Length: 135
Image 1 (cartoon, rainbow, N blue to C red):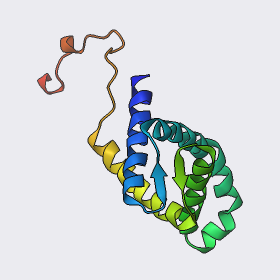
Image 2: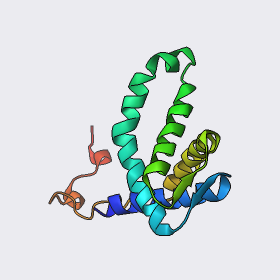
Image 3: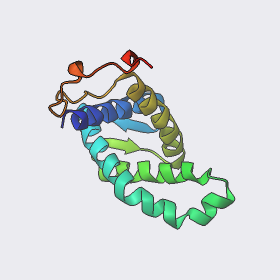
């Protein structure tokens, strides 16, 4: 559960940072960014795979570059569904999807998830070291 919350907050922060950089994108509040992060996760989980499948011929012809347009459409859907998160036009969405990818990647690289605090009941300190065998 803590990993989910951290991922959700990082996504919201990434959306706020992206809206600061990209003209035509605007986030009214942190609450709007949090809601937009949830909606973005849902759109990426359910709508985006359908868009990728439906646009597969165009994506193959353009050697994958059309996926940028699919990402932009996904971001515009999030903007349409989320009050307080505004995506101006398709060009803002296109630039926003590219910037969001970089910002999310950078933020996730510097913030590691919280590891599980338990280790399945094993005591690894009592195991022999691998280099202690004599041949």
